[in-house]
Length: 242
Length: 242
Image (cartoon, rainbow over all chains, first blue to last red; front, side, top):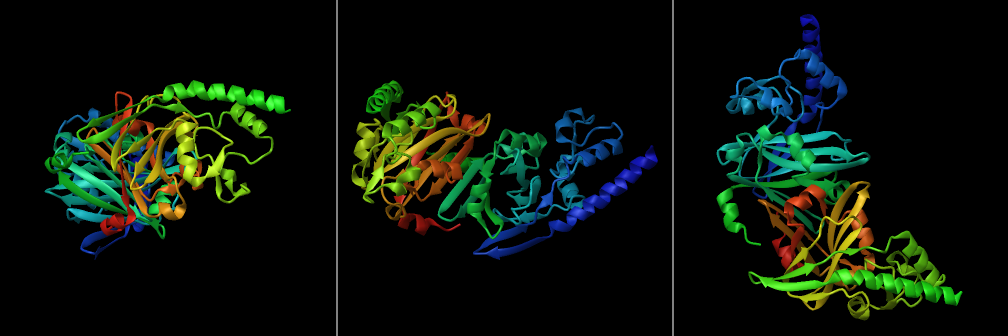
């Protein structure tokens, strides 16, 4: 049994490497703002073969999905928060960032305001564009996901999660801004904690949601630029006049 | 045949009056801003019996739907732009506002910034919330529509149209803003002309789009407050730095 588990593991690593290939990243600065080119990754998390394999490989131990993190024996340990892969890793919250960088090759960027430039928006769902953003002494995970909630009608969902606890997350406000073709769309909210699971945030629709036609209006040559800014909540509350 | 047409007309007028009953409007001022309470109106435009009756009543003459305004014989005449009812009226653009006020009882509000408070958001689709807004020497039509693009999944679509030509519309920018529960969503765009038809703007999704869960997050006790501001485009272009 252990032999089969290891075989599955090797196959999964190969699949993983295959997709890492597409995650090349280029960073440049335009008009004083850091522009980060983020290439898409086809999400493997919900592919049926991958799920079955992942379940076999961990042999009835704690599942790596964030829906199951209540079942972790040591309350200090959290499962892998990578939205792309079902990964059996678990560890302390402080080392989640290094796990995401080293194992899942998710890039990290510094700066209060950056532009996230997602390429190849035409690729079929499910597809994810992911980056980590280091700002104000914390790390955030930005996820743009193309998903078909209604069959044949893909939508784009963008959200920002704090790699920290929900209490820490309450101290921040993030803003996502699209601006093109005489249209501007801004979404501001308190980031959710990665402990709350990106999948449930997206299935609840509590994030920036774009239909395909709106995504096309905001895209330039197949790429979507999302301006990102993070502030502390105190600043947000002072501004909070409608 | 003329007798039947007139009978149909009388029945339609009664249905129309029945729905006018629900369009009572209250206006009050809160924190220096004009708050306009807009009650819903069940859209009759796409009810099959209504469409068939309207077609009979106009007896193969020009259809009142805006999709057909190219067929108007006098190019100076425009069809009724009311998004609620298929109405056989046509007239000059300058008298559209008085037609909408007098025949369709759509209220008009003055002021550069107003709050549109849509009540009874839980009512089933198709439902419309409509008001006219007089500002910067022009009149705008604000439409919030609850519609099921995907069966069983109602969405909310909000847009602002200029009661004027597309060239006149290009001189303005409108902003719709939702702000509640530590979330803020802003949509800014150039208004479309009423000659372009509100239905096609909504079916294209080129407007503020809200799914049900997001609408609930922004609602208070079943009412959704939308802050509205209109500016001239020159101001918008100067601000247009991302």
